[in-house]
Amino acid sequence: MSLSQAAKRKREGEGRVFREKWERAYFFVEVKSMPMCLICKQNVTVLKEYNLKRHYESKHSKSYDQYTEQTRDAILNELKKGLKCQ
Image 1 (cartoon, rainbow, N blue to C red):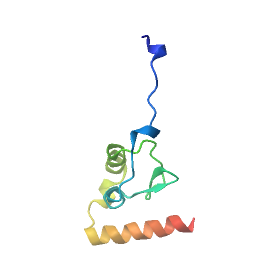
Image 2: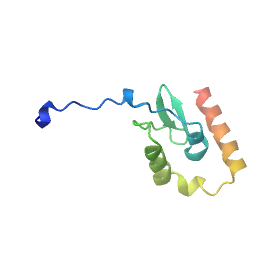
Image 3: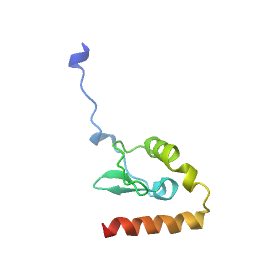
């Protein structure tokens, strides 16, 4: 089989599901079946923990890793409120 005849993989059938723990860990929520960063409002196209973690660590970890669990929860709730208001 040549490369031009190879079937493309389809993401829909891979069973990727947004996990609630990613909200607290990486400040992501699911909007219209796409993960969206609450901090910068950027969408990540592939719903994998690695991609969310990489985005958070490369762009936001220096600013948000310093907070305690309670403070992170408060920030998360404020960011979610801001998202609902838009």
